[in-house]
Image 1 (spheres, rainbow, N blue to C red):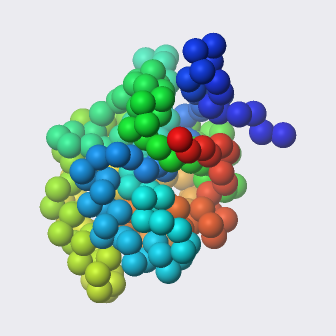
Image 2: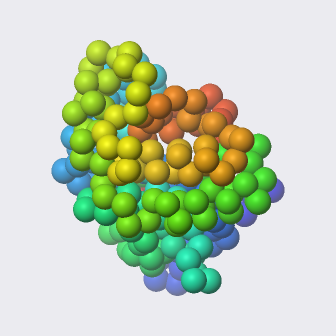
Image 3: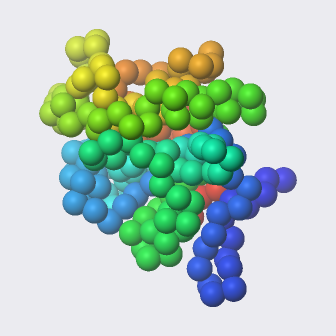
Length: 203
């Protein structure tokens, strides 16, 4: 039986437990960028789930280990960074993050998870956010992804892209199964069994 990754503390808030490097966080947030991403994918989300647009995922991140401590590694503007577990707990408790799924790549060993997380630290951390990918991803959402090349700059990353590249470079696993993956892709691949839900919750 899986251990819970998020539990109530004495003050009634939530805190993470039992996280490990390589786990993926797929979430919905109260933010302008989050709203815009959900707007772009509203039709595909409705067709896939039939659920309200506000439930659509708009951000991906993952767990890494850096200097002996666990962090959340995420590609955000202006550069990919490490965010403390405590800050993520604060964002969940405040309602800024109002839906979250903690995922493991189906079939991944602990060694593969650690290798992917280390790849993210070595080659994604500190890279610029891939703003140039945004117009292409909008086009993709509207008319389909028929150009078989990566969106944006090859040396910069948007949130899902950094973790996808890290898993594909350091393991034989390809859970996203396409170029230019987004948080919506992560959600869809979860429904298809390429990710296992370790924990999920909403506020």
